[in-house]
Image (cartoon, rainbow over all chains, first blue to last red; front, top):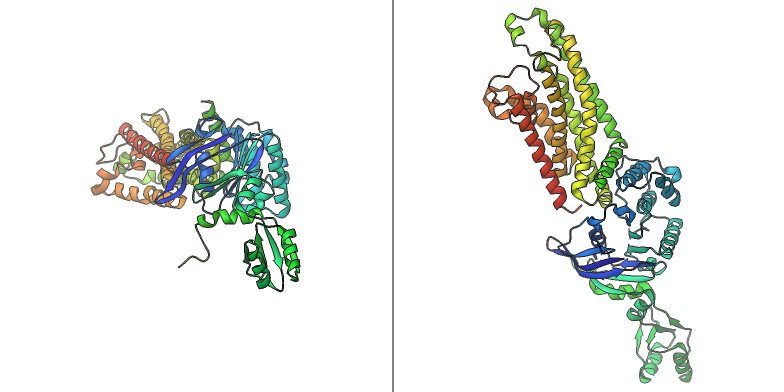
Length: 303
Length: 255
């Protein structure tokens, strides 16, 4: 169980995390989402005692991280891939980590096998691909067989097979009753892995809910209609008190109705319809809608 | 205490699993012995031709540390790399997550490097001193002579204290290039030049390597206030100040 309590962290004048509070429960994968620069990594670093918060705190099973004697046995963390000494072998890196927390040395071979690096154990960090470095980082996170896992953008640099593997691993770890927090700026990624979502934007909490509730609350379903008579159908729908908008590609988006009702209406006016379908909003759209105001960097920002 | 012992063991593993450790320490031994042999052969070979006054002024104990004074530059590089490569590679984050109490982490790192240095230097300083004295022939002294044993012990401490000074500064500055860029010219040239000029000697004697170096002289140089004991004390103070500054920087900053 992780409790983030009123966490605030500033870097100079920039407020990276602002009065952020949420909890992460065991037994499920919690997706920690936000656009780039939203404060995800800062929050995770504050959880691990790497960044000192200006105010607020993070408790891990009721204790501050720094108070845990051998923390790798409780919390496993994956930070960015550049967190190994380039000249040290993966095995040497993991052995030193194990020794620092009194973890038996044989565990090094075990985690190397779990992440599929047993053949590459002697490789030095600077010779690793991003994907291998990421696996080595995951091996380090698993070293102490921890109850809590904090994974910062774990799919970065992984190939499709690796992404499938890490998804399966996270699901398995949560199914074993562990607490799994995984950050990402890709909603589509979380859709396939997370049970619960914590969404932040510009350092503040935007949502803390289950994936289904999140979608229901943040994305409206609608009926998509393609017709050669958009104006006539729009008028008919509006006359029936149904809200309709015209999408850039010319299709009509009908809110607050059903395919059947729209189909009947079109038929009663004798209008041809090429396509009519009920659109379930994607997690991605829900995310975009929620964070639209909280995106720090925009491609179309004024120069 | 349990966490500290585990952290020291981890730091030892970290030292032995990077190549720079082996290379810098091998270079330290090789450079120390090479300079030792050259100095011993040179002075020993010319001793017979020296004037009586030169013979009287000759300090065989000090000559016994010619190699040590030079080789310590390799130890500076060893210490700086052991500290700053951790920052530059980002490994510091991984290891601070494993050992979140920064005082424990820092002390373990300093202790592991000091113990390695102590072991390597104790043997190298002693052997190089004895080799020099043998090559000096009739001018050489034995370890039982006045001041010789003290100078050898101080020679080993000198190496360890300069290592700690370098590591503290590296923790403060974080950059290997910057730290080595300051320390090597300082130890290799600046302090030597300032010490050889009578006008600047009174100030230069307080530089870390110069102050510690006083304890390796058998006969005091003219114009020095420092004695072997106070010279070592000044070096200890430098090392303590650098270590403390490095600690404050490590504790205050986000990793």
